[in-house]
Image (cartoon, rainbow, N blue to C red; front, side):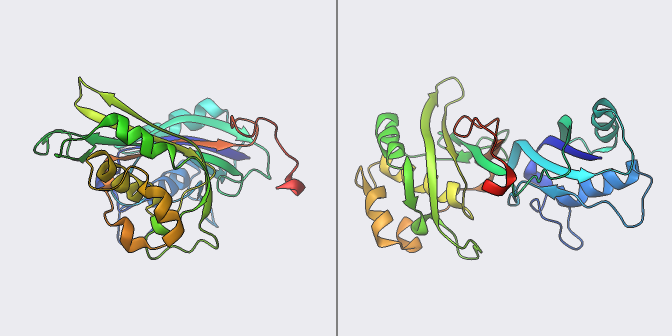
Length: 264
């Protein structure tokens, strides 16, 4: 039986999502717990994720799938895994899915949020959960810059070295900024059909520089043309980044109708 599981995690003490030898990773931990729950079958159960998150990046709605040797109620999967997982991980939802569902290859969109603390110095209680920007910043100018991300663009200036993507063209459906005065934070939210290696953290780095008048208001348009990662400059800390939601065809606002597999 194939199960789709949505999970949240605090990425602070993980070396990212992907399994690595002698390192604590999201994939490594959940794979271990799924196999323990299934009484360690041979061959072991393989867990597939919707995509990788880097060390220190958090998730509110990461998605994985796996084939379990027993047909259990989804509530049993939900409760059983949560009873085994460490305190910095939580299963939010478990669902039975068809045998051809794939957590990675069926993704039609993702939503990320970046939390940016505006304190002059890093708050010791927020340092693992926000980025920090101590310069004066204009939220209206930030939103003007965010609007330039919307649409289909070549994001070559916004991808870190080490990317294995065949194309750097991506479509951003929404890019919004909001100011939380009580928390003294700016929240930057991005929804698109896919994101490249470190893309959101680089985008945020450019946006905050525009908001602080370190760049021209529409410098993002120039960066599309030059296709030069060095000119985007900074990559914001992983601590402020959250994978908020993973969309699949049929539940994605931009793809409300599920397509037959052959059309994907």
